[in-house]
Length: 302
Ligand code: BTN
Image (cartoon, rainbow, N blue to C red):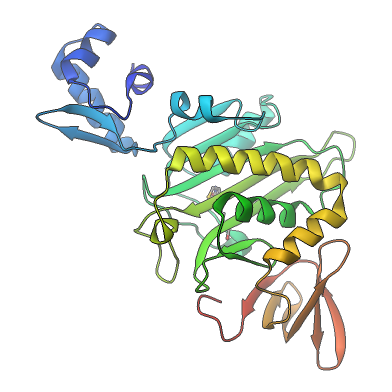
């Protein structure tokens, strides 16, 4: 019943009485269900005079679907709260979800970031979602390709290796988590997690996209899914991905410290290797970093 109510909501206020009529229940029952949806994390506004609506730009399935231009985002699950969209999508993938499936949640109780860090977001304030890929070709450049897609969709900021999107002043706008099971006998499976700060509140030191202009979350999500699909297709043109990533880089040419699984290194980020590794000159030697966490020295937000 709650899910049916969600399908009836829109950006226009509707009286609870009318929502109740459509569901075949009393007005008070409809009001109770609305409160339950709010409690679950859905960004719903209630006005005594006007009724009930979702916040403008809420990525409800009935709002997102007409905006989609490709196959990413189909099918789509929109949740109020969950543990982590990564886990929900992994389970769905095991149950047979197709490539392009997306799970988006307004709130996560166990959202996770790169290097084992937590990822915190507030309902209505971010785009917090996971996308399922079932790649048939090598995915070494996928993290960079996703960074390019994010930058193209958002239209501002720069990329910190491998794929953090930083605002022009260096604060973090978005992060990407690539969790892969690379196929041996079965095809590969990638759960791509994206957390994009759209509106305040954001964690200390982070930036929100709305600081740079108005944002409609549903439209932005549709644009991002389209860019992700374009870049995913570009995996067959690696030189194109490397070139685009370099165009948006705020990493190359900078003094950096890199935390890697093998320890910490300080030097100058010189280039990208063909496989997307970061080439760093450190103490006269050239190192290739395949995985790690970069801090840009002398930049806010590192
Ligand atoms: C980073 O550390 O920068 C990556 C953050 C990725 C967070 C996203 S939010 C949606 C998805 N679900 C998660 O638990 N994590 C990713």
